[in-house]
Image 1: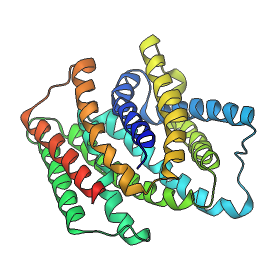
Image 2: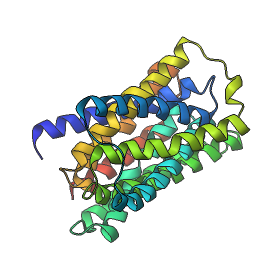
Image 3: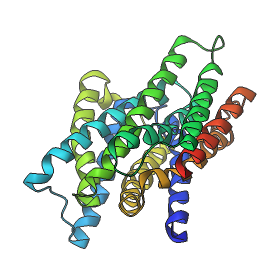
Length: 287
């Protein structure tokens, strides 16, 4: 893997490590699905302007509609479960659980992508990562209200969907440009989120301040517009399982930032879970 692509991938995972922290800050004033809608409305706007300036088409052709629709539905489900999970859980648990998705990528790629098979090393990595997820989940057991445990379960579901979506997305990128792929998934989810939030979450009555707006801008512009597009461009050139090796750093960054910015506790069980997930991802992706 070229050193430039490796450095870019590692930087993207660093940015994603801060995403649950930014989401937790924004959720102090915005409802979860409404935050998702505003976040990707902002991201889609910036990406659309950038593509227009570069004369990059973002509207799909007829033969591209079906794969983009499937990818968009997976994306919509994953982002919704992520925001709900962060809302109910904590930023540090969110960082570990949702970023365990490369473990699921390794499994899905075995059945879906040609030449990306499971090996004994990958199975070992998957097993270690799964034990790490269990450790993080049981970090709360008996000490937190049920709503926090529900959030952790939703985050595990979000990681599973993200693993599925990343695997499918790799196949989509073989047929559709990265700009169309990223823009279409954002354009699909925004109206669904905003309509739901206005109808059921009271989005129009939300109250925001400078911190919430800054966290929203980070999620929408840095993570949404920049990171998703950069990820798609890199993913087009690198096998998804090899690229996922760098994901080992994301839960580590997320837990550190959660501790430094939000003051969330760092327990020995959480630390053990972070370590197992990180090692599991590294082993599974390198194999």
